[in-house]
Length: 360
Ligand SMILES: C[S@@+](CC[C@H](N)C(=O)[O-])C[C@H]1O[C@@H](n2cnc3c(N)ncnc32)[C@H](O)[C@@H]1O
Image (cartoon, rainbow, N blue to C red):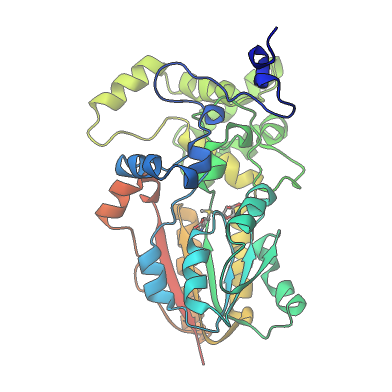
């Protein structure tokens, strides 16, 4: 056999790219061009024009509003609590350079390593912490700092995490029900689904995402897991559909007839389980508690949330802070993306941004 006919063309270490049927790759593994988007600027333009985010990247939301309200200045120290792809971080760096410093947190070491490389030529010093932002106060001591001028958090998951089937975050894929943003966490989504009580599951579905069928879904999960453990994304999606009396075909028909498209039937359950796995509300509570002690006088905090429970917590903490004199002022209303932004980046649709300024 000719060497070039062998898989990988006979070159050691060379892997053939996954082939796909038709003209467009559908699966994450096949989207090798999208996942290396900086080498394919035409494709980036095409996808953005269609309101799509290239697989393996993330479009930062409400950037203009964040910069406009937090007003980063040369020389400042900023805590970016949720580094992700580094979109907001890059905007901050451009404004605080050269003497400013960015302290970047993320629980996701897989993506943080990639973002580190992407920011290798940044014009300001960056310290990377593979840490929950609940550790924001400890890092001040490590960095020998007296406080941050700005604390910023863009909560929830990144597009890279949603798009990768192996992370188990999205009902759209075929993969394991992992859902951990931080691989150091012991329990996955599957672990919780197969061990929590019916009451605990129903409570999570209701409290973390207002799922109207939370009781029935929890009941169904308990019955099904007695027969077979629930470990894969399609299993959970099928169970939610069954409770709601839907089939894939009836759901697609329903969606076609809805003017604005409707929420996927399993979206709420997936969101609730992810919030539970990562204790997202617990981390936010801790960040809101610590922020006033970590900000310099007149320092600013800005938080983008994507979930009504989180937004309520942020609003309440800022209001209480103003009442108690910890913050001198706070945003009156949540700032939301303009129509144009939502059209270009539909993932921004549920974003809400609030800010507060620490008293002098
Ligand atoms: C919406 S993305 C941030 C995107 C980022 N602003 C950008 O422009 O690329 C949220 C990121 O926060 C991280 N994250 C979520 N909760 C966290 C926590 N409690 N501590 C640290 N990082 C967290 C996620 O792993 C994810 O990378």
